[in-house]
Length: 300
Image (cartoon, rainbow, N blue to C red; front, side, top):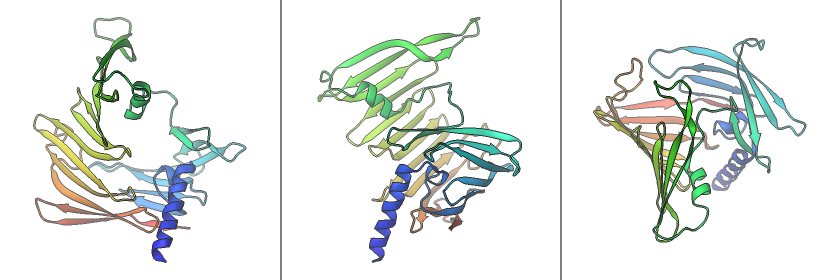
């Protein structure tokens, strides 16, 4: 019976995440959450799952805390279209404004604080859709030079100009996209597509991301000279993150404030019956010590 109930709760939570545009679902929480605390922040929700109040804090060595209060507007179909963020409970001193866009089936497409961005969103799904949606000549390579989405201006130039980008695509023996590379003065990265993994490398930033076909992050690394930051992730059959290994050496040593510069640890994650994260266990390999973090959660 317990097993059946767990499957039922998982089914409900999965559908909530797929259909709702509430703050509970956006924050990857499930069920009738009333309040949730994590990493020096506490969030309060109404019965519909929308934020009402939050006590927020920075996550670096110098702690700065502040309050946020939220009001929401909805359309005639009950879809949330706008959220206003204030620094006062009387709704004075507006901090931010968040808008929501929806797909044709009514599911949330995106939420954003502004409709404009300096850089386009180039992820592997967009690239596959544009460059890998049809079969190409086996073992072929294409090259495309076009105006960039970014605006470039050197010190000698009086007016900014749109620089040219060069895009390379390599296709495997099946005619499927295997490697994508984009090079410009401001953007330089490549993405390789394996059978079940996608590896993205930002060439001019020394970042490497490895994800699987389920869009789950498997590995992240940043290595530059004597600085290193390497993270690896493991998931269970339900898709929940259950373990993360983290190694850092001299990480961001040039920055004045940073929480963890050197570490070698394994983190395991604990979930409740609603599949909400309620705790972490940090095992430090160097000191053989274990730290416990609890994330209190309250339901209606």
